[in-house]
Length: 500
Image (cartoon, rainbow, N blue to C red):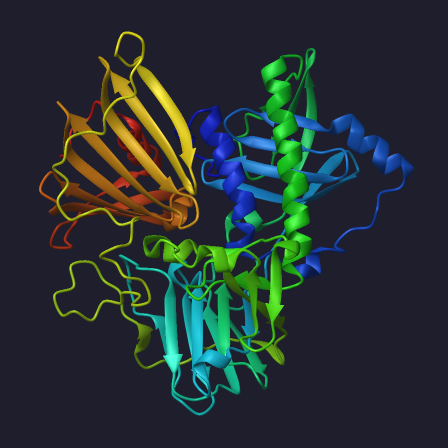
């Protein structure tokens, strides 16, 4: 959330965003230490929770549940946590992930070598890694952008010990000392998932007060809302009650998945994470994999969906660091493990080699001049103007029609958190937009292509003075201007605009 009012998607998009939050547990990997962060409330506390529970706000705000938990929501924001009532105020404690998390397994298929999947390191913060006696290296180069996940690094030998460090800017909340160093030692593992959680403003504690305004209650938050307060929503309307019930179901799923993550992560060979029912799999001790019971029937699996293949999974268990230290001086690093840059003519920019990009269905062709998809027929062979939304597997597809013609389409891949937006005119694609980390606003990179598939602009999100802005670059990487996030989001959603 931002203190500045931002353009918001509709109710259906809000629901998709919150559903994505539950899925994002696999990426955020909330800290198990939060599981017992608060005790069961006594009778008086339980009664207080019932009194204040409800939905405060509209497109952004907070939901207070009667078990002492809450959901802070807004554009690109969905954070769960718990709250307590003291001295007439409500104190909120969002779930906070560990700065680093390391998960490991033994993979007999790679022998004495080591493979590491880096997750979250591309989202900012200067993370440094050092293993054994090798020089320290940054994970990504300075000013890295145009990322191609998953990020997988290989070593020719087994890794016994390593150190993860990160320089946190002094203005970042929650980390008074700028350098945090975690040291790990282990034996027997050769396949890793390393996770970095850059601290976010939304994960910091805050306070609220409830005030009566006539027959309505308003919740005033210390960090959000511009001092205007969030009115409590009435649940008398049936559609609003249905949305509230959906929020309750999402909360239940979130905490269920949170418990499941304590048992480890399940991932395929391309490091896509899954929350699967153990009854659907059998364990193969030879390959150290969980194999889906119907895998033999799926031998002709479509190779274009390799990233989503859940037939064979490995369980990665969480490792605890040997030490955690904070120091005043940053670790001196030489070079980086990954180099990623837009318009890189040198060929050094990292691309994941594990998937066949030529057949990967998620990647659109370079030139998009094909006609618009055929329109669904009705009795009069026309399509009603307006918006429609539907799902195809991991894809959430949104379409806008005008004069019975498709003029705008978004295909959001929930599994990869990427999106493709196409604008049509007279049945032709006039330009398209590729977005990484869709609905995770702080991490979005938006690339604009013309009708011939040539890059026109890139818009890169960053935080400035507590708000989200996009730096706009031309095709040669020159900074053109800065744009407020709400203007960029309006630009993406408005089918009537033309590409500048």
